[in-house]
Amino acid sequence: MLLHIIFFMACCLARLGPKVSVSGVVSVGCFFPPFLEQVDGWLLRHSAAKGLEGSVKTTSADSQKQEVGASTAPSILCNFIFFNSAQLRRGASSRKTAAMLRGGVDAGRRRFLWPTSPPAPAGRRHRLAGGGRSGGYATAQGVHMNATDINNILKANEYGQVLERGPASSHGALAFHSNTLASNHPGEDCRSSATCLWERGGVLFGVFDGHGGPACARAVSRRLFYYIAVATLPTPALAELEWAVGEGRAAPPLLEWFKHPRDHRGPDGGRAAFQSLRKYWRERLEADDGDHDDGEQDDTRLSCALGKAFRRLDDDLSAEAQASARSHRVRSPSGESHGSPSPLRVALSGCTACVAHVRDGVLRVANLGDSRAVLGVQEADGGWTAVGLTNDHTADNPDELRRVLGAHPPSERRTAVRHRRLLGLLLPFRAFGDVRFKWSRQTLARLYERRPDLREGTRALPPHYLTPPYLSAEPEVTHRRILPCDKFVVLASDGLWELMHRHTAVQRLAEHLKGLREQKCRHIPSTGTTLADLRRLLKERKGRARSVPEDDNAATHLLRHALGDDGYGGVATSRLSKMLSLPPEVARRYRDDITVTVIHLNEPHL
Image (cartoon, rainbow, N blue to C red; front, top):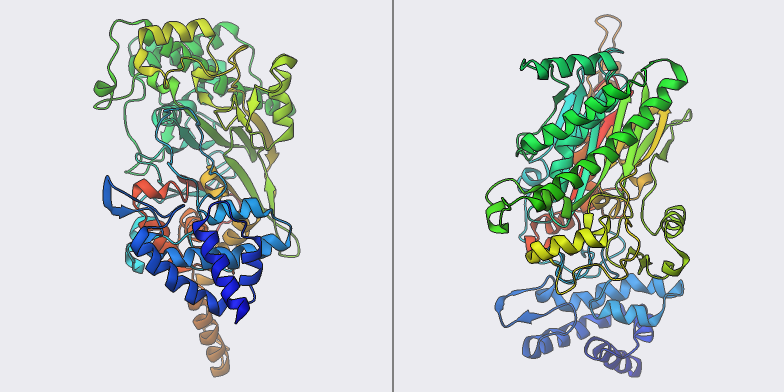
C-alpha cells in the first residue's frame, strides 16, 4: 500500500512538475501497471479542472481545438511508462525521459530552422499509440475510419504501368508502381516517370522532396528529365532537334510521360525554361565530344551525363532567378499564388532528388539529398537482402560531413555545420535551389534590398555566411548491372524511411510478390486428376485466398504498412485510421510527405 501511495505521488509530480526526474517513476510503473488506472482517473479529473501542461494544451484563440492527445491525456503517461522502461534498462538518461514525458519528443526532421521560414510544424514529430508492441508517445484523436475510407485515401494517388517488353523498350524494368501521400498542405513531394523515346534511351523514374514550399520540387520534377535526355542524346539526334526548332517545325518528342491525373500539372517554366534547355543542347553540339555507345566507356559517359544534367539544371534555375530579380516585372507574392511561381520563388525554395535510369540492363541511380533507393535481392536460398544504392547527404553521413567541412576554411569548422545542419539551418547538404546557401553575399544583399519581403525575419543572410557556396547540387551516381536475383528497386522520399527500415521495406514487398504469385490460378489437368487431388487443390486455393494482398499496387502496400505497422509484420487498423484522419495542421507532427516508386525488374508475372 505504501508503494502504491509513493508511486501515485511520483506520477503526479512527474506529470505536473517539469523539473522532477521520472526515472524512478518509470521503473516502479513497470511493476504496478494495474495501479496506473487509478493515476489516469485522477489525472483526467485534474486535467478537466486545470488543463494539462506539456504536449496537451488548449489555446484561448481556439478553445474547441486541442492538440493531439488532449482527450486521452492519461493514456499518454501509461503509454510512455511502458514504452520507455526498456529504454531506461538500456541506459537512457532520466533527463531525456523527463523531457519526453512532458511532451517533447526528439525533434522531427524539419528541413528549415529559419526564424520565420516556410510553414514547419509548431511541435515535434510524435509517435501514435495504438497497435504494436512499442506503444507510443501520444494518442491522436482522429475520426474512426472504416476499410473503405482508408482505401479511398491510400489509393487516391496510386499509379502503375506495365512497360512494353523487349530489350529496346523496357531495358530491364518491366513495370512500376507509384504512390504519394501528403502531410504538408500543399504537399511538397513530387514524382516523375518517363520513357526516353529515342533509340536505346532508357526509362527514368524520380522522387523529389521539396522544402520551403513545393515550387522547386514541382519545377525540377518537370524539367530534370529533359536535361537528362539532352545530356544523354547522341550528337546526330541533337542536331536534328536543333534543325527542327530553328526551322520552326515540330520537334521530335524526347519523352513519353507516365502521370497520374492528380499529379501537379502546371507550367513547366515557359519560354525562359525552354531557352535554357535549348542553350544547353547548343553547347553540347558545339562541344561535339564524339558520342560512342560501347562497353565500359558508355557506362562512364552516361554516369557523367547524369551528373552534368543535375548541375546544369541547378545553374539554370539560379540564372533564371537572378534574371527575374533584375526584371522590372516582378510579381508580388499574392500574384504568384494565382499562377505559376516566379523563377525567384523556385530558386529560393529547394528540393532533394533521387532518380533511377534503366537502360540496356544497367541500373543507374543519381541521388541528391536524403531520399533513398533500395534494391531488393532474392538469394539462392529464397531469403531476401536489402542493398542500399544511395547515401544520405546529411550530417549522419561522416563522409559527407567531412566533404562539407573540407570545402571551407578551418576557421569555419564550428559554424559551417551547427546542430547537424548546414549553417545551423538546412538539413540536407545537397539540394536543388536553396540559393540562400549558394549565392554570394553581394548578390543576396542586392536581392533583399530590392525585395525586402523575401527576408527571413530581420536577418538578411544566414549566420556565419562567410565563404559561399555551402550547398551543392552535385549528385552521387552509382550503377549496377541488373542480375536475375535483382527483383525490384524502391525509390522513396525520407518520409517513408523515417517510419520504415530498408530491410523491413524489402521484406514487405517480398511478401507482397509472394501473395501476387499465389493469387494466380493453378491449372488443373483435364485427365488423371482424382477426387483427393481436387480436394487438396481446393484447400490450397482457400489458403491462398486468405493470403491475397489487400493492395495490387506495391507502393500502396508499403504506405499501408509504414503508417499502420503493428510491430508484428501486420497492419493495425486503428493506428492506420488515426494516422490518416489527422487534420492537416497536426499531421506534420507525426509524419512527413511520403512518395514511393517501386520498379519491378525481374517479375514477368506482373
